[in-house]
Image 1 (tube, rainbow, N blue to C red):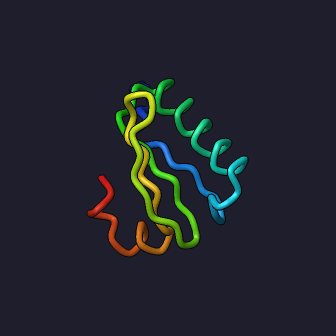
Image 2 (image 1 turned 30 degrees about the horizontal axis):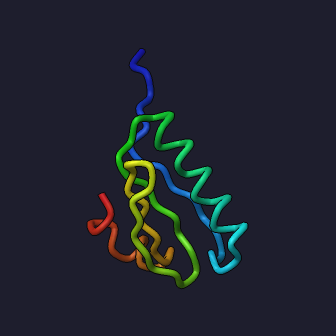
Length: 75
């Protein structure tokens, strides 16, 4: 039986305006990216946009609606 593979890591949060929430969501995502040796991950929110490089990993912050409507933009 073939081992399942992880292709992407996604965190979901209503918003990242609170610094503690932002820190928690990024930390959890970075843990997953390191664990599964992924180069990038996503944080889906209600309305936030952003792009960050942290610990050599790409963090893409985008509204959930955009992620779902335009899946080809998010490989």
